Length: 292
Image (cartoon, rainbow, N blue to C red; front, side, top):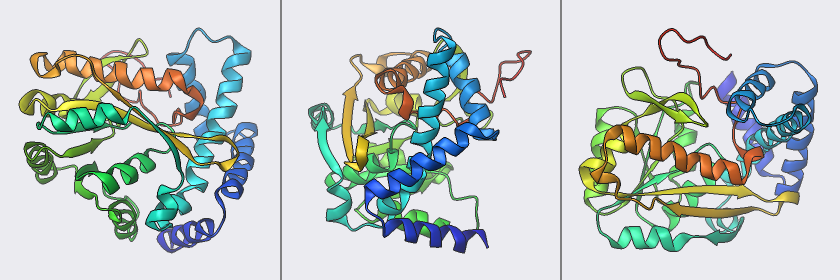
């Protein structure tokens, strides 16, 4: 019954104007702040580990803001997944740094678009797939009956989704060889054997090596991107930032650390909109206790 219920909720949210959807998210986030729950626990743990310099008052304030922004990510999903092309792209108010993306494309070696769990990462995929050939890696939905909805929502403006298996990885290499974009969530914790520990806010975080291997083998540029949520339901500002160094000449370990540093830079600019409720530090080096 979960899949039909989720479809019903998303369809209902899609009928709402974005300011109202965000207002509902604000209420939900406030409730999550007040009541004990897993999201609040993980958010507090991640912020305490990653931003240890915050005093207690500032840390609690960031936890509250983060839970509200996380709730908005859910309540705005009806619009992001269901609205038509012109209406959903109309939510993008300003685009910053797109010249980095265009310059990288002109090199002809393809572009790896690194989009962390910050703001509304779905909007980045929709905007880019509407303007450029784009293939994105994704994990099939865990809930039976939702996979078709997810694929239709994310591919409806021209993008292509490929699964996180060998066939999907081959599709990413092929897209880069054609000089196209490939989209990856660089802060999604990989399965054991598919990553290494690299610094993330000064703490070892199990990080995928796929992005580094793609960049090293193909010479593709890496461009970071996020869709910053604007207040009062006004929409989103998109931000693109390119890596400065030639990643292909570096080791897998160096590239992976550089990617984490790029993610950190985006988060520092808008920390409340990062999905601190995600167990980014679940895997720990041998002998080290967990945070959750």
